[in-house]
Length: 398
Image 1 (tube, rainbow, N blue to C red):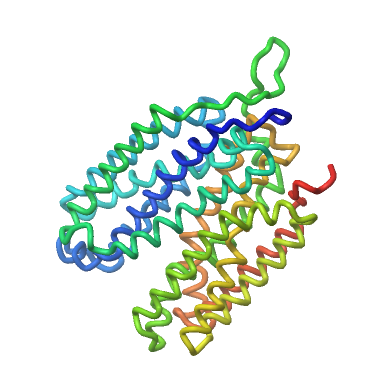
Image 2 (tube, rainbow, N blue to C red; image 1 turned 180 degrees about the vertical axis):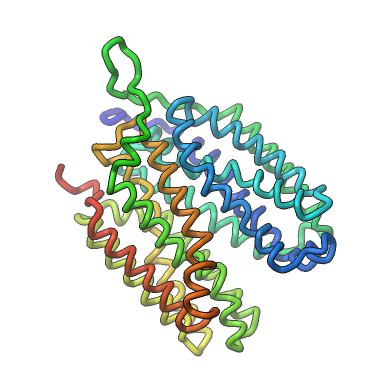
């Protein structure tokens, strides 16, 4: 597909990949406005509710690498289809879960589709989109998470006063998306180097695990999550505890999510066309770290929202850049791109769960100045990683 005109059907593929990721985020954060209802109805403690809220992300720690490897062997369409069936079952059963244990299990099951899609994002998009558009396509799908989160916060309880009925709506939508994937998604054939006898090259997971640059990219994705989840999960309660109104604190998070969503679509194309992504992404990482800390310390709502918007712009294109790295590394061939994406997603999900809860908050002794200083340091670590990683600009010489 290198010298050929890119197929117009790639935009259908992008839409059918975007929508399940969008709905996954919407359904996950759909539980937030119903937190009190769930805790009362199922006699949940706050800790139990927290595990329900993060359960779809936790499945990524255990499934992402296997998801990428399976897609390398069996094809993206088939593996994603199976994962969407699991997600549909989980989302539908969530509406009828009678206790904490069953609710936790089906919520974990609900996260399978998003994890499998995330692990194979780079592989699938690079098979349909030309190199100059891959970052944009990956960014659009990554933006689905922010989009679904924002919609869930805006919708609140408007779908239904009954949490079970609201959950059921999500399950029905997933069933429709699974059917659309089955009917309309196609596997794009890409030329791959073959071995003697005409067989496709074997998937060698060892090549992925032995690549220091893949581990660096994965560590960068975890550091990115240290900043991103700190904004999404810690900023609002921290501001409220400091005396900011719930409405103003929530609006700050919404502004960040919306700006980061737009930036994750628009910034990868800008970054990829500049001469040196190492310098560009390093500067953006430091800017995201600085603006996050300034937003936390701003006393006026308007100034805080300006700084958090700057943070969203700066950070929005960084994860798509990291996720597209396997497509250009010589040690990661076409047959290993899925496994490479799975490695990045595994470490990223681990970072999303562990860094805010088990590094930032305990070290800082709560959600305070020190917590946001540590979170900002994650951005500095990400900047250093980008300096070490190769230049992935489409204008860079080979």
